[in-house]
Length: 324
Image 1 (cartoon, rainbow, N blue to C red):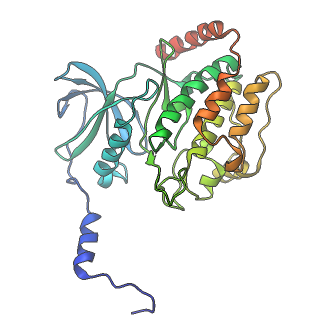
Image 2 (cartoon, rainbow, N blue to C red):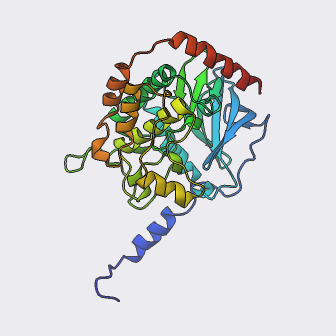
Image 3 (tube, helix red, strand yellow):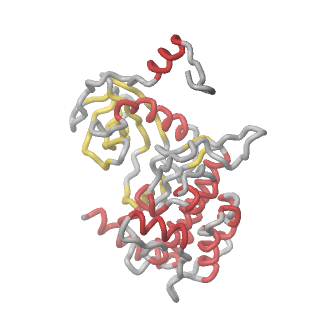
C-alpha cells in the first residue's frame, strides 16, 4: 500500500460499485408516436438535446396536452438517465413563476424514464432573432422577463446554467417561458459556504460554450453571476443579432470570451441597455450584478418607446416561424 493511500473496506467498495450501476434496465421501452408511456400518449417529436428527446403528448387522465422529455437512448448518459431526469424534475418542480416552464410529473415505465411538463405552444426565441437585431425596447422587455424568472429560481437556491435563446419559448401572446432546467444545480446555502456558489464539481464544464462565463470555461464553479453573464449574452444577441464574441473554432471562441471586450454597434442599442449588458459581461464576476433582481432593476429603468410597434413586427416574424 502506498503512503497516504486510504483503505476502503470491501463492503463499502461493493456498495460504491452498486451505486454506479444503471438504475434502470438496459433494454428500454421504445418511444414512438402513438405509443403510451405511463398515462401519456406520445405525439410528434418537438426537439432533442444532449440528455433527452422531447415529444408532444396527451395526458389521458387529465385530458390535456403536455410535453414529455425522455432519455435519448443513443446518449452516453442513458445509463444514468433516471437519476438525471428525476433530479431535474425535483429542481424545476419546485419553481412557480409565469416565465418558467412548469413540471407536472416524473415517472418510469419498462425501463424508460420521463418527465411530463407544461406544453408551451410557440416558437423558440432563437428562431425569432434578426441578423440586424431587434429594437432595444423589445430586447429590454424580454430581458426583464428572463431576469425576473432567474431571480425567482436563485432565491430558491437553483441555478439554470444554460440560459440561451434556444431554451426560451415565446408564445403568440408574447409570453416568455424558460425551458430545460436539466443543467440546474441547487446552490449551497450553508452558513460556512459562500451563498453564490453552486454544487458543480470544479473542473466539470457544462452548458453551451457561446453563453458560458469566463470563470466557468476555466473550470470554476458556476454561480448566480455566471447565469447573469448568460443573460448579458442573450440581451446582446437580441439587440444586435450577433454574439458579442466570435471564433471559428471552439478554442478561438473560448479565447475571445476570456480576453476580448465586446463592442456595441452604433445606433443598435440604447445607452442604458448597453450599460446593463456591459455590466453583465464583465470578465471579473465580482464586477457583474450580484443578483438577478439588481439587473431587473436596471432594465426596469430603461424606457420602452415604441414597444407596441416592436411587438407587432415581432409577431409577424413569429407567425412566419410557425408557418415554416
